[in-house]
Image (cartoon, rainbow, N blue to C red; front, side, top):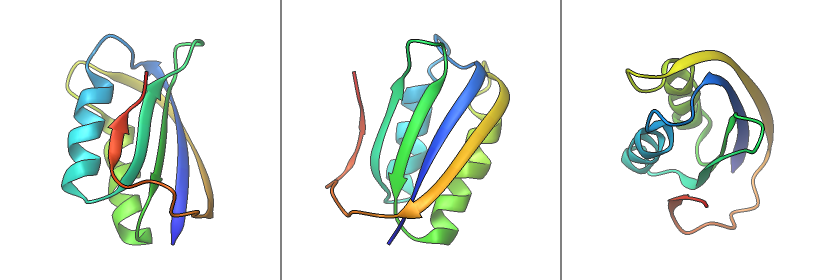
Length: 90
């Protein structure tokens, strides 16, 4: 099972990016997490089918209406199947 780590930069904190990402990933039945990073980026880690992960990546480039996404760094790897659901991490 593939996994993807996304590092989303721009105006992505304080605009409900994590909440909207959680809803999208849950609707796609992905597992993993989304969290704010101290440097102002949002990190998304997700596991699932490659086509479904690409849908999440496409969404992350847009984000919720209030977000200003400048860049999405995408890192693919083999998944570890270590999550049961998709969560907002602290």
